[in-house]
Structure formats: structure tokens, C-alpha cells
Length: 135
Image (tube, rainbow, N blue to C red; front, side):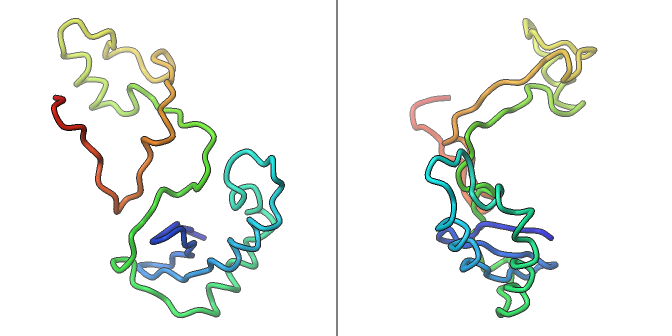
């Protein structure tokens, strides 16, 4: 089952290029979540609610995927971890720059990970914000 968050914090089940709005299930999950829960209540409840999500999707009309604004997939993530060299072409690109610490023979295991601000996450339909006056 594929899930998406869309428009104004709606939850959808995606089948092909159709989104089925199952937001009432998400709302019920959030109402029953513990106050001190770290992260997204939906993700925590997913093992117990998959069947309810599928049933809700079957009971609602679909919306074409091109008609929705996709949001980040997780509503309340506690941290964002990223890799400085997450694919071979990027490793080669970084290694070709003079003075760069990343070497082509080092993979992600050697390069490690780094943390990003939670505000750096956007959905597939959102634009990357650029600060004016900076290059």
C-alpha cells in the first residue's frame, strides 16, 4: 500500500495515479495518540491500521494524482539524516572538485551521515525556497 500526504494535511492511499482520501482514519489515529509521542502518529500506528486504511480507500471516490499537491510523506519527523555521497555519480562529481574532502574510492560507509534541519523537507509538489542575495 502506498500512502501520501496531500493538500492541507490530507492522507491518501495511492493506487496507480489515483489518490483515495482516507483522512478520517488519520484523524482518529491522531486523536488516540499519546501526548508525548515522538514523530508521526500515523507511522507509529501503521502496523495496526493498514486494514482500516484500505477499507476507507475502497469507500471513497478517487482523485487524480495530478490534481493534488503532494506534501512531505511524514508529518512530524524527529530528525532528518542525509548522506553526503548517496550515489556513485555524486561521489565522482565531488571527488573531481579540487580540495574536496570526498574521495571517489570512499563510499557512504566511510563518508558517514549528517543531520539536516526539519524545515529542509518539502513535498514533491513544493518548490525549493531560495534565499535572495546568496549564491
